[in-house]
Length: 638
Image (tube, rainbow, N blue to C red; front, side, top):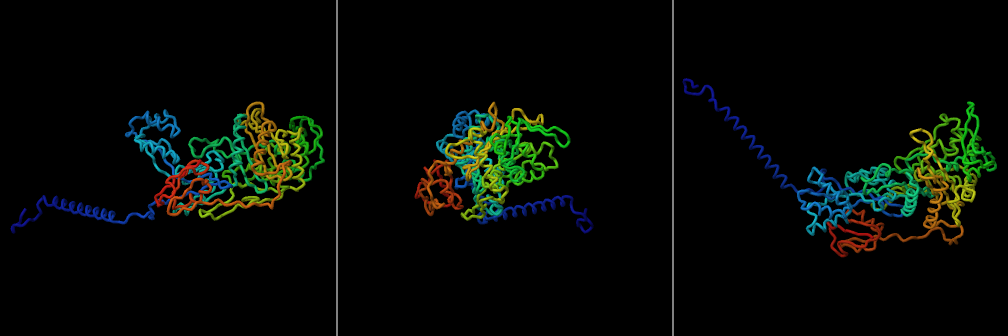
């Protein structure tokens, strides 16, 4: 509407629509300009140098090695084998070609591809470089259409099943230890500073000797199969230092293929499993009683086939024996494994004093050897003991121990009364080769201590030597030219259904100190739930002890009684392994061992991939090739 001056009193109705349109165009133009400016900034910005906070730093997890520098765990480049289904030409041919390379049946590969709801499929993860190269060579020939290789950094365990429960394993991302030493020493193998900034973790050296471990696992696995046992534990320790030279837990597993294992095979039984030890325990109960003065070598007890007495409550307490042994001394109790004699001997000492002496051996407490999840076992306070507890404990029942506790206690018998705690970690070494921490001999993280008089320990060893005589339970462990101090045992297991001792489930065991005069090696074997008529420790556990002793005394250089010995000053000089020099060109690495290559593997400026075991037989690129930051040196060992 216009007024008399011919001007608009109100704007025309279309004006508000135009104004909104103009505002919209202005906003759109502004946003477009902003986007263009942002794009220009991004395009003109210098390339990312890798030092920004958004870039994930490269972390080189430190290696785990045995006492001699043999590599047990190492970080390396691996590959995940994948399939992109739309690119497959012939699934049957592809499955047949991949089967021998991936060691997976062709039918399994075919079924996995066919049943997958996705087009992208992982066939196998964390394969070694030798497998990756084989696949890449076939792809270069135009075969394996649809197969891909996803490069990753992974953890490999060159010795496969060897000492697998001790070493442990890492997660799928290779960034955290989940079991064993990988878990227990996470802060050493992959320190927080390394995770934050990148770099290499520390080296962890174990006390384990791979050769000793192999001997124990080989013998132990054969015994497990022959006896159809549920499990076998086989340990070797140097009592002078506490070094665990070998600790076999069978069945075991391959940490390179953790998905194929189960809880039983991953269990570090010698450290975490508690069980009643049976008659082997008489070595410790009887020496404790001798140490207290309650009994002596001349004390005599009468075994008529069982132990019997009337308790303070007027109850009849009866413990059966394997036979009627007549008049027995402490020596006879050990040689004949007399339950009644052990029970009568325990009556000579009060419960509190007896319990304290057993605690001195370390029963009821962790050894601190370094195994994660270690059990304390079970040694109840005397306030919870029944009238039959003391005589029952004296013969190795109503107390639960670990194999680690058993070898620790045996060290006191071997060392003339001085107990030395076990250890499985020797030292921590930086990537530069500097020792950061050394777990000193004679006790590792614990302290050695005297718990017996020397004469008590020596007397017990003398009794144990007689166990290998014709009248002893351990005669099958006897070695003609080597003196062994031995004790066998057979323990019943509790049936969880009845909560009573099972008539069919046993643990057959045997312990040996050698040479008996001055022991430098403790062997301990426990066979869990053997099947069949042969389940006694003296029958099935003593022979493997003899076999292991025969092999280890020669390997470790332990003197045999009838072998001539050469005198020497007590030490020898061994040449240190010489590592190859790497500068501007690829060196000739043929003939080098893994141990000699270790300094190169730990260098951050080199990319080295190894496969196999032994010594370098082939390498690529060849010696003399130019070496730059992108060069990957591939080594095949045999």
